Length: 341
Ligand code: ADP
Image 1: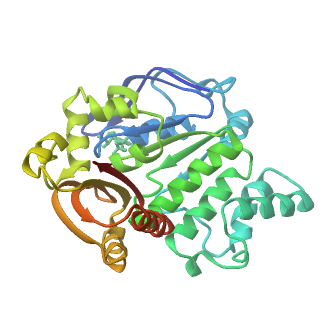
Image 2: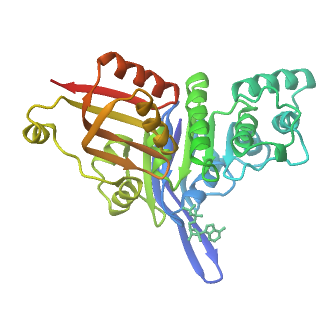
């Protein structure tokens, strides 16, 4: 779907030349969610602006669908840009227009007639879950709702590619999850290709299929997310992985525990959920009056999520554990219970 081939971008400034993007090659498949991660100044914004046709390459080629972006100009470029739409960290909404007027705006520019606009806007509002908020102004919306408007507006011209520029950086953890889930849902429903840039490994880990790590304008590592996490090669990737996962305790093997507690009933509880849910986990477990003794565990906190497992000796029946699992699932916390005889 997207082919970035040997692309460089050089900015000439008074204080000298800046090589913002340096010989980058990336291919993104149709329907893929591809992430570009890097620290500030790595060249991410420049790369996404090149994809969007807001900047022109100094050398190399960018193909999106059937078109080479750098070969287009004037009307052809404007038309292509409608098919490569973008959402932004600070939403870029029209503050004096309502939700439906914001979403309708690109359709007006594209010359779509009023009846068709109305129909499309209604479908998009349904898709992003804003039904009932059509007449609201951006100032009356939460951050997550504003980004939903941004997403609906970006989808109005039925783009081939959706570019996300730090789209969740201004949102709190729970809202970030909601917006990322919405992007996954949209990919599923529309088969859309998504490229996102971010400085948060959490975003990459949560929704991307593959990612490129950038430093000093270059791609220093590229691969599937699991591979980047399990086996980071470059020092930047290692730093991202380390910053993302902040180990509180070291993991203990079950065999070691068995030696330590030869007669206890050992249960391993594995959970994953938003960090803000941690108090809810203990509240629900307490509600069932479970006599649980945590003997070892590993809890990892990222800036937006907690996950890990606890080894516990526990005095309760499987049906109680089942009820706890169900209650936690209602809170979006996934709990897996594994009993070691
Ligand atoms: P990131 O998005 O990863 O923070 P950028 O693409 O914004 O990185 O910037 C990469 C480098 O290019 C930086 O050194 C930045 O100062 C420089 N740069 C970006 N845009 C311009 C511009 N319009 N003119 C001059 N230098 C620029």
